[in-house]
Image 1 (tube, one colour):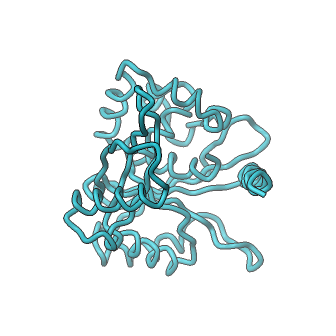
Image 2 (cartoon, rainbow, N blue to C red):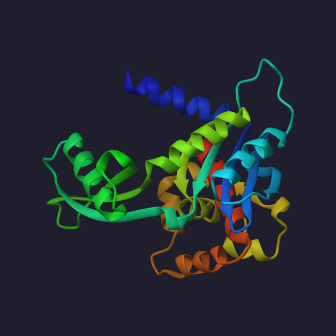
Length: 249
């Protein structure tokens, strides 16, 4: 049954023709849309700045902006799904060592408590996710976790629902930008030499996690370059594209 479910998910992702990502930037939000055609590369079909404030009133205006954005949708099409980015000052993250014999529910509870402590909130007030990797000594797992105030996620859901779109996921902007930079044709250096509309992204790299990890680099040069890019107007654009790419990840 699990294999059938996995196969159905892979088939669904392959059939997605369009996807959208929405990332925060200093003066509003950047909406990026990717198109998949017969080419081996994903291309941008939407690159739009939505000038709204980063507050509750801004989210109301963002709903209107989303409603007016992108291409018309027929009555028979499902709601457009968008992956939304969290500004990094709203995010907490960390690592924890866990015994191998702890159950998934025990690990989840421990991560939730740690995230709540980091954010200064009650456990039920946090939204979080985590991923495990083996410790080098083989005696346990190292859990990488990320969390935010659940209220922000609820606000995003309300904002997107009012616009007639559907919120597919919420993710830290830097994490999404890494995905885009890893898959960008020509490498991260090409963001300074190509217009955003000319960016192309390699779906084969996105689907090959081992390749993606190797391209992220063990020397730290990639991280330094990405950090520098995130301090420029290119940063939110990379993040928005990385969020759209998540539809095929």
